Length: 245
Image (cartoon, rainbow, N blue to C red):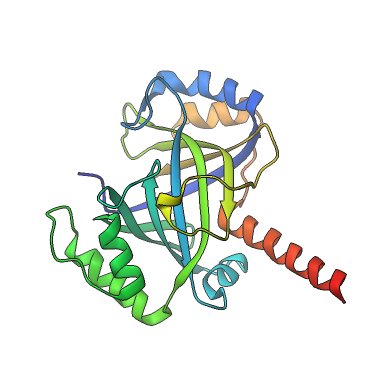
């Protein structure tokens, strides 16, 4: 069963495809591909992000507080109603990421998110996480706000399974058709040729990884997919209002 509760430090790097190719070649002797990533090929991850009517969660996140949280529904590829998906709360406090998630069938997730119906069947359910999700829903009353998908390569350390490295490209978003089964199309978020690297670990980076990051002059970034999209969305909204006025 997939890990459902964990804490990690996360660091991000926004690099070019050329640098990614060099980075991949250097780290692969130390890493193993995850179950979704066959032969080092990218696979699709699709998400629906939920927020309050007034976008309080993402607005708070952009302000870079010590504590922030978000709710998302995730699938690997485009699911059908009986397919298993992930519903998760992602929290971050002083740079430490805590993720709480449970597996659900897509139709169960929709019943829970849109109608407040708690799922009761399935040995894949995490009862404790469902209680936390229920509290989150009752506290924020969130609604679907954004579809966000990307193509990913994911790896874990050969000597340390807590070390995870992911590479995301072709990040795409939309603010309509906010259902996972509607497909993974959307507007591009990054420029062509950009790759977002995320390194996650429960402790410090191994020396070999620090050496590679230094050799390739890879600098950390605070890039947020949802945050970047929200800023662009608000900029476009203000420009349209200005044009009308």
